[in-house]
Length: 270
Image (cartoon, rainbow, N blue to C red; front, side, top):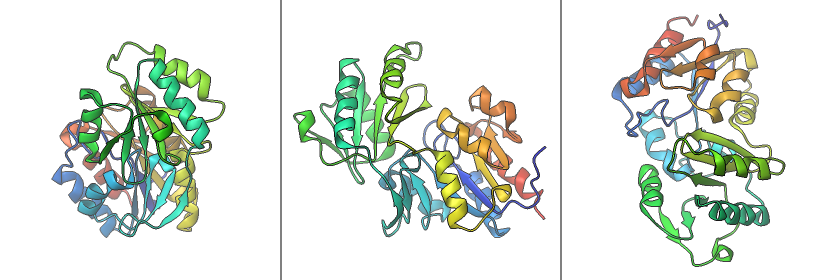
């Protein structure tokens, strides 16, 4: 089992790790994170969400001063909006990805810093925006999409149909970072962006060695971050690959299971 006694940093995913499947942050999770902070452990959120969508949960947890958003594409202070590191998708590559997603019948969302853009709206698009509480803007053409996105997110509705996601990954993986955060979601990120890169950046920024870093997560986009960390924590709803090597697997996120994992870690600290 990985050494847990000297952990000084926990980098945690948010959706379906800290939050339930219904996007509720259980009080027992808030309390467990609070106990870990009282022990002197620095806790940082790392999410596929935008800064705007992550902020309400970070505020409740008292973790607004440093966070990683867009799968690590933006790292900074959620209160001030000041970034330590930020990268975006090249506009031409982003527009190409949006067009390809549309041709494949996927709903594709273009993420600015404080707004989400789409070519049309429907129940699927409205559901995703409602989940995160972000502002949605509809544009008439691809060329009307503004600037360069922090990420592009593609949404499917059939859990058994991998064809469109597979096609995007095969076509775009040479120039962009594509990773699945849920069976219905394919995240398209700038090249070199991942939560593993984010936890490395955070550890160096905070002056902490790899062997004092822990991570928590449940999905494919958390996988390499968890492998990099000295201690990996997860929940019962995580993908099997993560559960196969995690130091501790708590109950499902719907039971606030990460609180059990965090307390397990806390009880083993020096």
